[in-house]
Length: 75
Image (cartoon, rainbow, N blue to C red; front, side, top):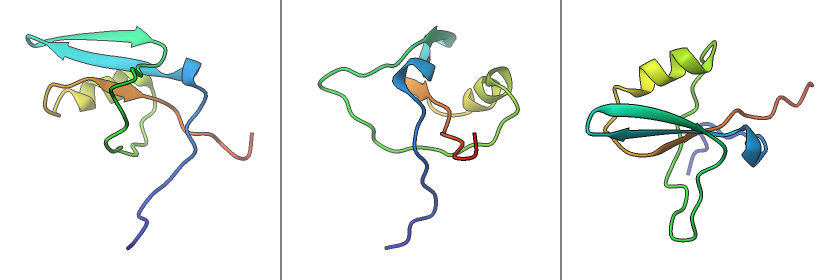
């Protein structure tokens, strides 16, 4: 087994949810976690801001994506 990347995620209230429905994308502040759902995997992406990141994420298949910053251990 090889760990390629891992980070501590920021607090839940720092999350943004990106949903794609019928080709329309909506962004919602706050976490997205329901009892029947769980984290299936993650992408670690270095982006200058949320707008740039959401443009890049449009290339992925349409599903709900929780966007959350990682913790900067030096802050």
